Length: 165
Image 1 (cartoon, rainbow, N blue to C red):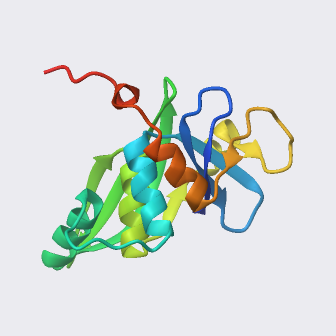
Image 2 (cartoon, rainbow, N blue to C red):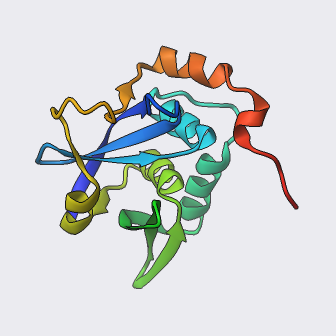
């Protein structure tokens, strides 16, 4: 397993979709994962150190883990299948290990709140990574927190899709 960190949030220039960029801890490879605006906002708020009077969803998950006397020891971005990434939360409570299937974006948001490490495999990095300095037009544009906030405020409710029961 290779430890990665959130290098930055960006926008895909062609789709204007948010992308979280994970970079290997001791290397140059980056793993871009396209995420939804809500999850991007949750990650951006934690990176910016923003706190709210009442817990948001990822804060609630943090409180549940802590309240149960457990600890999130790691998040693993496990695979990509049909352009969908998968992740697991590894929650430890005493001698019990609970592996929870989760979206990478949610997993990253919770890991940031709990200070837990994020990992992926070398194979996934090789398969899905882009070089930091390749100049590719696919490389997402990095956003500072203010620009990202403006992007989120400019979203139309239709950008989130239609609710289907």
